[in-house]
Amino acid sequence: MPQRNDTAIWSGLFRISAESGQTLQAQIRQAIVAAILDRQIAASMPLPSCRILAEKLGVARGTVVLAFQQLVDQGFLVARERRGHFVNPEVLATPARPQKAPEQANEIDWKARRQIAASDMPPPAKHENWIKSSYPFVYGQFDPALFPTAEWRECNRMALAVLEIRSWASDMVDRDDPLLIEQIQARLLPRRGIFANPDEIIVTLGAQNALYMLATLLMTKGSKVAMEDPGYPDARSIFRLAGAQTLPVPVDQSGIVTSAIPSDAGFVFVTPSHHCPTMVPLSDERRQDLLARANRNNQIIIEDGYDSQLLDEAPQQALKSVDRSGRVVYVGSMSKTLAPGLRLGYIVASADLIAELRALRRFILRHPPANNQRAVALFLSLGHHEALVRRLSSAFEERRKRLVHAISAFLPEWRPTDSAGGTSLWLEGPRGIDARDLAAAAASRSVIIEPGGRFFDQNDKPSRFMRLGISSIALQHIEPGIRELATAAGRRPAAA
Image 1 (cartoon, rainbow, N blue to C red):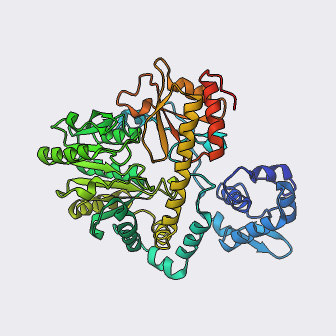
Image 2 (cartoon, rainbow, N blue to C red):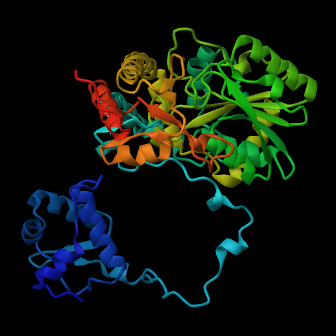
């Protein structure tokens, strides 16, 4: 046990970092709780005084005072007059937190025991330090400068009011926040031409959770899913984990080539508003043909509203909006407008299917966190989301035009897909180039790009495609970033 005057050991117990996403007060509380639960502080030993600990940690004395006071309120510490703060003996009376046992030579081979090969699937495109990059051409992340911080805080404060807490704090079992369902029904879906009843909507933890539930409920070994190639890689992996066989279908300037969809496929997965990853919209002729073929071949269409939340110059209605047979299942998300870390999405489908999904979801997670549902519902109801969509749409369109111009000027051999809207640009490079090598070279110059090989069904081959996201990079950094990318590609940037 550390002694009271052993300040070196005390400093070691309370390690805090300015780089942490948590407040200094929260870090101090966590360190003390961990030390108590790990039996590193005896009940008879007083903690350092607030003044001494503040000096050792280099923080304000008030920060330590507040941390100690909250731990007293929570029952971890007791304050004894003129003696200081001590560990509450009642806490030490509970069993100690178990220590990790040393590794044994005969460990269980969990990989051999697994029934699905999740770890064998292609890894996600993770850029954990993208926010520290000078030129983050990443997809699916947010821009801190555009995030509606004040509005989001307002809605979270409102959700923490006493009456609101009474609405969401209880276990809803398999239900969703009725206000959020109402707002999705009235604010989000009509923009896509979809008009649904409340019993035709279920809230999910993002689009991926929605796809996983659909695959778990509807697919099995032997199921066949026709997919765009290139296409959404995580959807492909999800379907394969369910035992399904994915059938690649080519994509051209009009979207998925519907005439190439196998008639024996039981499912067709499409991103018709903005194809993932080329961003081309599915033409009206192909839309009609897709629906007709699905009716004729008794296929279920899973429609992912990929990058459809923003305002387009020529918006298209969702396939779901013109479906009269009930065989189109629509998957939506708020990740591209509000924040990807929020993890809220939804499924719109026939009431019978939604009822089955609710029954399944109850065994997976019961329901998405109700406090988050209420905060998002308030955000929608107060018009904050509408205002945000307008602001993002304007900013992203300006960025897209700036990016297209910079590509033309500094990387003319790279051909972008000619498609407006969305939050990314898909490019095809010259023959012989491998975008993975370019990505590595660009990263050394603080430029983050996404090689396009992962989007193809055969993703183990060199690819000359790449995707550049615009949601996270500031307008003024786009041209310098492309200049650096051109240098990484071996080109000598032209003079400004």
